Amino acid sequence: METRQQGFLDSEPLREADEDLVSEVNLNNMTEEEREEIQQELVKLEEEISTLKQVLLSKEKQHADLKQKLGITPLAELRNNFSRGWHDMQTSTAYKKTSETLSTAGQKTTAAFSTLGSAITRKFGDMRNSPSFRSFEEKVENTVSSIKTKVGSSDTGGSFEEVLSSAANASSQDPPANNLRDSSERPC
Image (tube, rainbow, N blue to C red; front, top):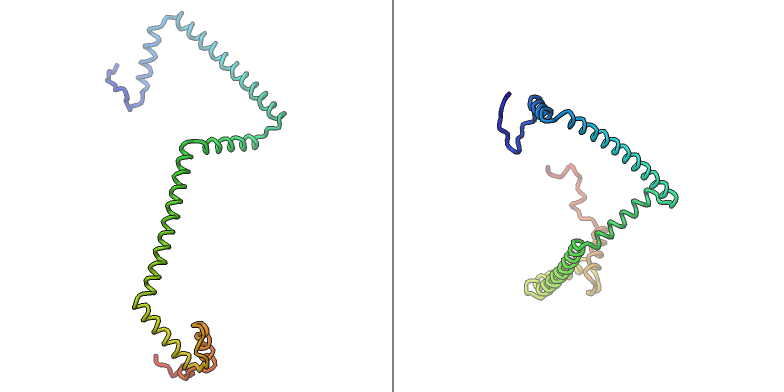
């Protein structure tokens, strides 16, 4: 026989020789009387298991019959289990803490966006009052006046949109001469 030292967590599987060695040891140390006693106990245990399986099947059938009489369907059970689980989850401390944290985060995010919006509005106001924007605004007004004069509008008032629409109307009635050229005359 081969003797080998095995660790507690040996990764090698048992070989046939090892199994034979174990069964020889158990059989050699046991008397015939002990062996018969164990056999009888095994048979008795198997009979009890069989009886318990039959009783369990009978109880499960009775359980199903009672549910059917009460009108409890598998779908209703599933719905009840889901509702109970949802309620249990909502009442758990983890859910409450998460909900409170998300609520606080939402409030802080809303406050941050509000502050950002106020800052942007203030910056636009500051920009509009700046000298460079005033200069730009004056140039736009001069350009609008110039367009009004070229379009031939008699009134000097009016909004920027009115001026643009009148300029568009004037240009659609009188197309420029350079757009009338033949496509063959264009340089490549």
